[in-house]
Length: 204
Image 1 (tube, rainbow, N blue to C red):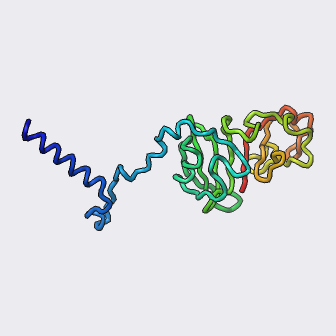
Image 2: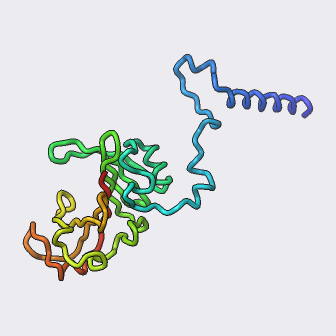
Image 3: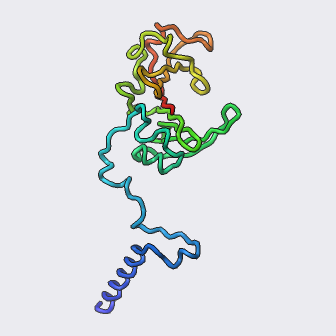
């Protein structure tokens, strides 16, 4: 045991020296080495366990805004590591749209679209508020009538009604509900009273 202990100490010192070294001989060969001392452990920090709840504001969602790169790490940091992100592309109006889906509990809770930087965030997470409004808030709590504030949804939102959030330049709410009237027409205000927010949309 006396001969083994010095060997173990020497090996530990050698490993410590390699891990803390900023210049490794293998770097010139093009090999990539993982150094735990330079890995970002911020998502595991106890300081992040009790972070403020995400909100939709004029500035964006959490810390994600129009200046945030369409990059997995940047988006994850801006959303406080709350979601698992996956990247995708789709065709829309003859163009390719790049997006990230934010997943939680196996469900899509947000969709973030943009080119170099974020241009739009669709929020479907009931835990994320916009002021006092959230998924499930009724139309009648925010509006008396649709005229002047709302328009028919488009694309995948065509069955809903999109309304500008009161006093906002960047936030709108997509309302959904039952109506059996003609396609393309906005339901009457009496019908809309029972419709609720199904999506909060932030645009740059």
